[in-house]
Length: 202
Image (cartoon, rainbow, N blue to C red; front, side):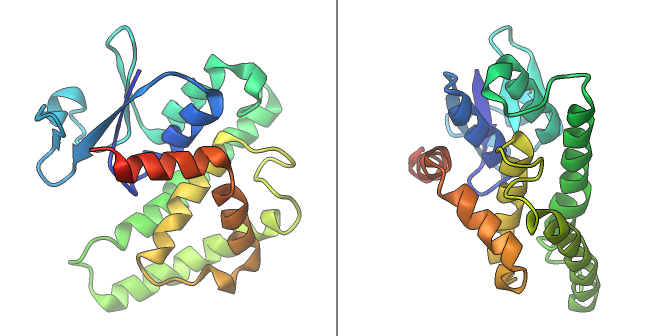
C-alpha cells in the first residue's frame, strides 16, 4: 500500500493506524502547493480531489477520505481492536465519532487556515469550535479514549486534528481533559514514529 501524505495534515491519522497495525506501506509525500509528489508525479491523477490522505491499494484502487481509510485499515486486522466489529452498535458509535471529528473539529479548525477570512469571523468560528471542545471534554473527563478504555481509529483522528490548535495559539490547557488526551496519544510509540518519519521522509 502507498499512503499519500503531507506533514501535519490529516493524513497523520491513517499513518498512525498503519503503524499500530504493523502493516507494510510506502509513504509518498505530496506538495500541497503544486499538487505533485516528491518524485514529480501529478497528485491530481492519483486523487482528483487534490488533498491527502489517499491510500493506494495493491490492486491499484485509491481510497480517499480519512474516516473511510481509517475504517478500511482497522477492518484488515479486526483482532487489533482499533474499530468495533462491523455491523455492531459500537461500530455505529465509532462512525458517530468519526463524523463529529470530521465535520466539527477537522472542519472547524480547517477553516481557520484560510487567510482570507476576517479576524472577526475567525473569532466566531473559534467560539463555535470551543463549544465542540466542551462536548469532547464531557466524554474524555470520564474515560481515556473516545470509545472507552481502549485506543481506536477515532482517537488517532482526534489527536491529529487537535494538533492544529498549536498553529492558532489555542491553548488546550483551557480544557485539561483534552490536554491529557493529547499527551496520552502522543506517548504512543507508533505516534512518535509516524511524526518522526513524516519530518524525515523526503
